[in-house]
Every structure is written in C-alpha cells, then in structure tokens.
Image (cartoon, rainbow, N blue to C red; front, side, top):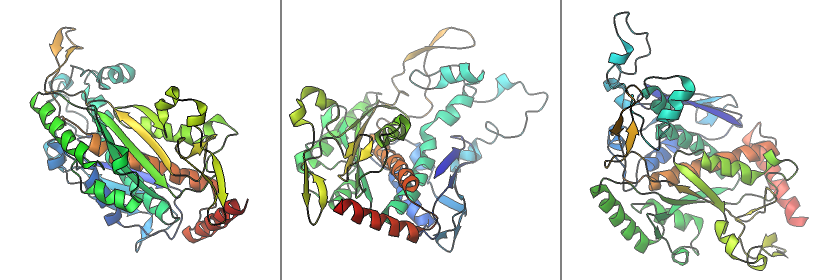
Length: 393
C-alpha cells in the first residue's frame, strides 16, 4: 500500500490517493468523517476548526460501499477557499499585477515554522508558498488515510486507540486507566475534552490550556498510541529499512511539530538495569507465546512480538504565538516581531488523533507487505492461518 497527499491550507481542496487496498473491504465516507471530526475536536483548538467542517468525498476505488482493489481517491473541500480565491488562485497573474502587491504576501518568516528554510530551498520570495503546504492542515488527509487503514485493520482483528499522557508538564497516572480494555479506554478518551484517560489530570490540563491562552502562549505535550491484536513477526530484522519500529518512529516524527518518539518504557530504560527492561517469555495452550510484561512496547528486533504496540510522541508547543517572537524580514533584513497567521493554544489532543492514524497506516502497510492482499477475505484467511502457526510454533 502506498499513498500521496496534495493540497494547500487555503487552496480549494485537499486530496489523497491510496493504492494497494484489497478488494471487497467495506468502506464508506461516514467511517472517515467520524475520525475527521475527532481531529477537529479537543480543548484548545483555534478558529480554523469553526471555519472548516471537514467532510470527505470518495471519488474513486469504491462501489456500493466496498473497495474495488483500484486506487481510492479521497477529497476534502476547504470551505474557506471562497475567501482566498484572489490570493491562492491557480491562474497566472495579469501582466499589470506585481507579485509583491498580492494581498497577504509574507516576507516575514515565523520562528519555529518552515517559512524561512522552505523559502531558501525552493526560491520563494513570498513565504506563503511555503506555509500553505507546510501547514498542519495537511494532517486532515493523513487522518482520512488512517481511517481507511483502521477499517482495514479491524477486518483482521487489530484495534487502535490514542490518548494524551502529558500537556504542559501535567502527566497522567497510568494506574487510573491501565486495566481498562481497548473499548473502555476508547470510550473514556472520546468523551474527555483533551482526550485524556486520567480524569484528574484532564481537569488540570484544561485549566493549564485556558491559562496559557490568556497569556498569549502555547503548550505542547505527549501522546500515546496503542495497537492491539497485531500478530508476531510483522517487520523484519534482516535489513535496517525493514524494521517496523523504525518505520513507526518515522511516521510519528513526520507529524507537524513532533520532536521525539519512544516505545514501551522509552527513555526511562536509560535509568534501569536490563533485568527491569526486557520482557520474559512464557507460553500457554490458549495464548501460545506471550510476554510477562510489555516494557519494550510490543517490538523486538524490528518485529512485532504479539503484545500490544505502545508508541509515544512528543509535540512541541505551537510556534505561532499571540505573544510573538522576533525574526527578520527577508526583503529589508530588518528585525520585526512575528505576525500571527492562526494559532491554537494547544493542539496536543488533536495531535493524538493524527498520531493514531499515521501509526495505523504504517501497521496496515506492513501487514500488506507480509500477506497476499488482493481481496480482504483472502487476507483474512492467511492471517488466521498464520496466527495458528505462530501459536503452535
């Protein structure tokens, strides 16, 4: 499976094309729209979420609610485009129009964004050409693609969930939710204002977001994604670029504003002896092989172990501040105080949704690499046979 996304933040639409999905898989726009709505939620979102009500159109690859095996095209129309047609128009400028006179031209790069380096790389003197594509608006399509991947994973008994574990130094207590089932955890998270499973921490997170918004600043945090039901042996140790944890780390780090990733105990492993890090192996007739603990987050040697995959990512505070930072105008080379494009005081809850979907996409891709996937029923049979094989190994 492979995919591409296209579109600018204030352009007419966002588009994704997914190739390699098996035929006969149930898929509807409603399945995707539910996830797009979650991405737009969470306490701390800004005004753009009131402007755009993201709804997907499936324009190829699906007939009567089932995939055809041909490329699937997803489109999300930008409702705000009607206000940007003169600024982001596709047609060439008239001969008497000076590009430097275009409304909302940007010559002042914002610290923490792609503006300045992107302008250098692609030769853009109007930095809007950079920020329109580098914007986190692109994650709309990453979630849409991930919603398709999650539907695929459900067909073979793999479930996903994501939640916020830290915002602005407020950390959840895992004991408050670690004994919940995936369904129970998902229910708690989807009904929480910051997608947090620890109710006490959630209250403090909401307060911290409100406080930071009043001060014109922003907050980052940590999100956790859990994948349950993945069979052992997905990925490989034989080449560096086939290791699944490497692919998952790359997917997490590809999300806007993410600056770190860890699995299982993660960086805490540096503080512990090996006896408190590695997971002992046991076996039972009902379960086959399994680990007595899951400190390594369901991955060993670049492959799944059959235990839940647990991966976390850290998101930096959004750099667009209402308490602006200093930068330099590329035209005049004079210092200035950075302008505001749009900003959320905290987008960590929404980022947890994006993280879940990019991780689900990588898991789906890895499954399709391992098994024949022309039809969903054929793949289901192969997966079931493989599960029985590893259980009896």
